[in-house]
Length: 77
Image 1: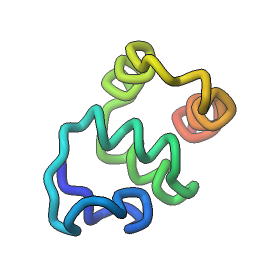
Image 2: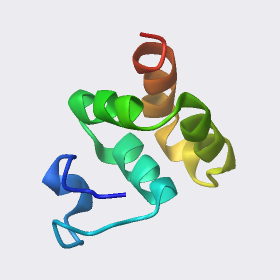
Image 3: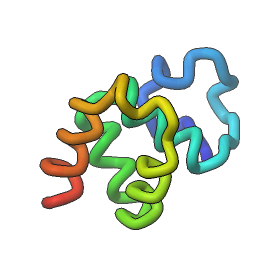
Image 4: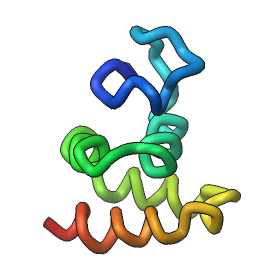
């Protein structure tokens, strides 16, 4: 998945035109993205894929509030 459609600072350690696995993009956008990035993520990828990645995410407790906001506010639109 191309990362250049999200805020640059989320993927600061990658080249702008990098192509990363969807799972990595989901985790980084949920962890560090702005609301506009979260909305864009939900527009691009399916809700079921995003929820599947969240369920399998080992470190999700660190970002529990952001994940909850995303699931309750962004995905429920």
